[in-house]
Structure formats: C-alpha cells, structure tokens
Image (tube, rainbow over all chains, first blue to last red; front, side):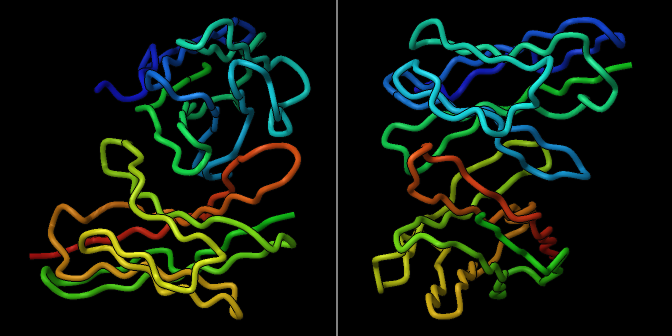
Length: 112
Length: 116
C-alpha cells in the first residue's frame, strides 16, 4: 500500500514566482492535512480537508497561500508571488479516522 | 490555545539502554489525544504511538511505551533496548477535539543519538 505521495520533492523558485505543490493521500483516507516545517518555527499546521471539504485553514497565511482538494485522490497547495520566507519543507498528511496522521516525504521549497 | 513543550533538545545514549523523552502540554479540553512521531535523517515523519486522554493505561507498541501523567499534563516516551536506527528527532504532538477539526500541535522535538 503506497504511502502519501508528494510532488515535487524539491522545488526552487525565484522571488515573485508561483509554486504549486501536490499531494496524493493514502487511498481511502478521508482527511488531508498540510503542515510546514522550518528550523525557526518547527512544524506548523496550515490547513485541513475532510471528505474534500475545507474544514480549517487557520494556519494559512492570509495572503498568497491557497489550498484545494478537487477530488479524493489529490490536494494542492499554491503559493503565489513566493517570498524567501516561504522557504520550508511542506508536508502533507492523511488520516483514516482523524487519529493518527500519516505523513508524506515533503516538498522542500527554496525561494531564491 | 493548546501548547506542547519538549524541553530536551538532544539526548545521547548507548545502544541497548533505555531512554525517556519528556513532553508537557497545555489544553482546555477534557478530551484530547497525544502522539509521538519520529523524524528520520531523510526527513520522513513516522507515527509511533498514541495515548487517548480518557485511558488510564499507558500505551505500548513494540519497544515504545508512554508514561502518561494526566495531573501533570505530561506524556513521556520511553524507548527500551535502543538501537542505532532509533537515532532520529522525536516529536510530541497533541490533537484537541474542537469545532474546527483535528489539527496536530507539535513540540519542538528532541534529537536522539544512539551510539554503539
């Protein structure tokens, strides 16, 4: 059984460019979460979908960040006009029953 | 707001010994869930073990066990018979049951080095 898949694994963008990160949750999992990890802030919650519906986006920066889940097999996190401070590892996790969350390998975003 | 604190930045032990990692949390909820995750050198985050707040028994999975002290808001992770491959960063996390959903709040992590 494949785990959570995230693509790309690494992405380098120039300041002001757009970045789209993809996540494929574990088949059958109804909840999808996005987190961000940096040295300074640690692991931070960004947003959460349940049965494709957005439930909680309290961790999302108000500007430039958006997330979607158009179908049960993938979710995207889009960052418009990327800034150097957006550089981080972006992690997607999925959960069957909202207890344990299973994490993907992450996408390392570097904004030059 | 919920908060999870891991005060141990790093721990070094000799292989085959037992190690305990500390974690304290703050919550207003009467029902909550506590988790420990491990992040390997490759960056992979792996779920290890979970404790439900309403359960008095300490959870145990393989050579991982928990020391849950609810009055102290403490959830320690105990690893017995440590192995070299246990070297990793260990994160404590909490999930409250609130109206918004089930996000995890993580501690800052404890780096464990197991020496031969």
